[in-house]
Amino acid sequence: MRQQEQALPGRILALDLGKRRIGLALSDELGLTAQGLGTLERTNLRKDLAELTRLAAERGVALILMGNPMHMSGSEGRQSAWVREFAKRLEAHSGLTVRLWDERLTTVEAERVLRESGISLEKRRRAVDQLAAVILLESYLASLPARGETGDGLG
Image (cartoon, rainbow, N blue to C red; front, side):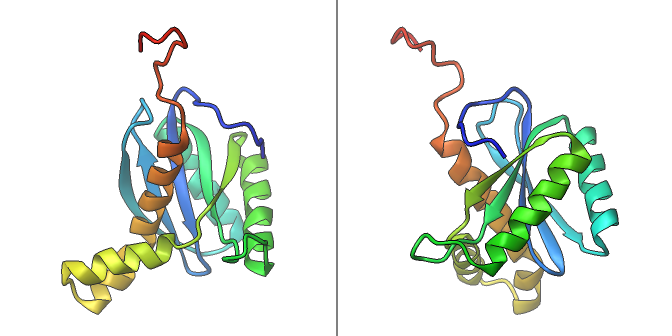
C-alpha cells in the first residue's frame, strides 16, 4: 500500500469493510464525485476477493480505497489489522493498488444522515454501509490536488 497521495487516472472504488457486508462507492473518471454502488454481501474471502476484482475490472478502477478503522486517538487496533490484511490480499488478487484511508466517524456520519432523512430503521441498516463508503471516498477526493492543476497558476 503506497503512501504517496497523487491523483491516478481512472476511477476509484471505495470499500467500507464489515464482517457481513462491504459498502461500495465509485468515483467518476475525473475523480470529482462519489456515487454509491450498494453493498456486497460477504460470503467467504475467496469469493469476496473475486467479486471485488471483477467489479473493479468492469468499472475501469485504477485504485481501491479502503476505510481504515482507527481509534479516536489515531492508533490502530485489531479491526485495523484485520482491514490491513484484507487490503493486502485484495491488492495481490486484483493487481491494483489498495490504499487505506482513515475512516473515523464515517459510519457515525452516515447513520446521522440516514436518521435525519426519516427513513425506516430497516432501510437505514441496508444503506449505512454504502453511505459510509461514499463519505470515505468524498473525504479522499477532497484531499487530492485538483486534477488539471498545472503548477503555473493557470489552472
